[in-house]
Image (tube, rainbow, N blue to C red; front, side, top):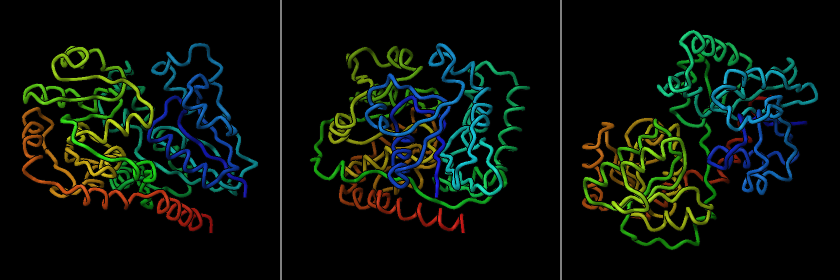
Length: 359
């Protein structure tokens, strides 16, 4: 059986790319189709350098790395331009437009979807792209139409399952993503006295709440990640931890684990489709303080492996931070919960789902 894997874009190393690499382990001979691939990124070259990656016409546009917002309406066309006639099975892995591909009737198209496009359906960040309502309406209509090209949906969370049903009116099978537990088994955790955020610094991630809450409480906060909100967050938190907030930028996988191993708790203040970082924290025996909405409700157990706050306000988050010591969360409970999201279990469930979809 000849297999192709379609991914939205390969421009940064993150949770989606880890799952993509996992799919490549299941199907080592598969070709990868993607809109654009940043071959200048050393981490990506290290991970995907031996893979056959086919990019779209967007890759040929000079300066595409700086034109994401302008080119976004062209992404559906980029995926439609691919030809999959030689493949028996195509797996699209997406939070945006990878499912827009067109396949012939005898080619099975399975979509592993973590959410419909956020900027279209769930978050107000689309306004920042400068799109008019007419264009957004057309993109929403196109997104719904292209969803009908999928033969079989897999949802990355119950949260995604509900969204797929609500927006695309399609059923899906739940397959939880994974973390590689082996990366955490030999790491010894400790209490470094700081709270931690690991996230791309986008507005909808609400990292400003974590900064303001920790400043108000006089608690130390470290932030791993980069993004468009960096300057604004630095204005709130001060440079290089002068006011107790330290911006660490992008770190290697091992450095992220080392910093995570020393935190008092991981803070997630935004709405997560799933929340892989919450599982990684628990794999190290660390509790999670999270906004009680979306995917984290499936990865964190209230009062046992973490604490939820239910209003996206500084005061609500401050209250949760204050509670973390009194709840006395057991690190072993956290580790046990993380084991439910093992790579081995994911591989088994995914293979079974694919077998069911093509028979």
